[in-house]
Image 1: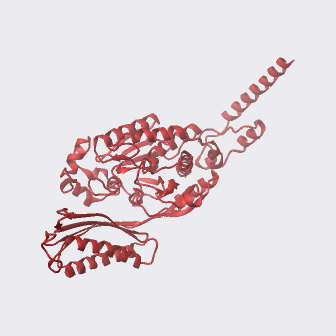
Image 2: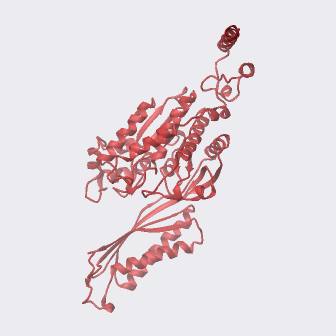
Image 3: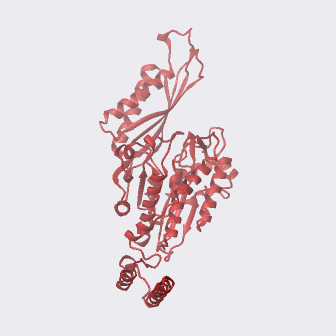
Length: 483
């Protein structure tokens, strides 16, 4: 009896599936409008059968949100594997531009892109692109990505989550059956960190069309070992024709750009929130300052007769703090990250000093006021201490970037539809997104990281937090792709 009932149920299901198949074949082809509004016949069929039967790519965003599945263990394993391409022992990561470890890491990323079914290309400085062609490839694509270079003795997650997480986001969408209208493209940016050549966001600056940088890379840029950029790039297989203007992208090349990143601060973790929707990126500026004095023997030269370049540098470092605090804004920050003394002997009065100063603010005018005050203090200190101010150089003085309103809206919607808590926040660290904003509407997704740690071995983001970020990125890409 049970066998007869099972056969009857099987036949009923088979007939139902045959009916659905016949009805589906009669449905009109989809349009952009239909992708947002489910066909009434489909809804009737779903109600009758009790199962969702959307054609792949025909999801409403709520249905797509429920179908997103992240391979969290696989993503964590990839992060661990990528961290092994390092010139520092675990758990630290050191991966500097165009070194052997950097080249090996690039090869690893390109292989993951290929395995994800993306078409891969590179430009003259090694920005790596992986594209998933949409149904309307002539439309500007939606892009995402970040960087994988790492400053000395840093962590595994900075930038890396935005590259490997982007590849996983594409895999998530493919597993869900989604089909993009606009193409989706991942960018792995060259040298976001300024470690080797003192230039931050080198790859994205060039993509944004920096003619000054393109020219400098061909002529004057060298590293600490006096290796030219051209020589280093060629050793890694790039810069064959030295035409760096070929890297430039026209404004509007992308419909939108979204970067997934660890927060690098403690706010999300402290407030127990899942996602940060970035509304603006602070404006960074960096300065190089040098003083020169007479030097001399630490015992023989009495205090009234000294022209101490080291004390001039120390006084300027304190002046940086003073001028930043004078702004009376929590968004104004300043750091003396490098202070070097020559000759660097305990029994020798410093004859030269070198400082490198970083100052940032979301308000460009306020930040520029701080720079002006720092320069005025440098001149005053030099006169008072009877040393020479031999250099005061503004290395870069970039404007802030605002996230695009549509991109913010889609990121917030995606978080809500995924039942993830989120807040609007400012990025006080700069990212490649700062420069992508010059050629494309831009947005950033932050995820929590342990105690806000970054640029140190203790940097960490949990698999759950990374999965949440990847889901929000996936759904945001899908929404923008169909727009």
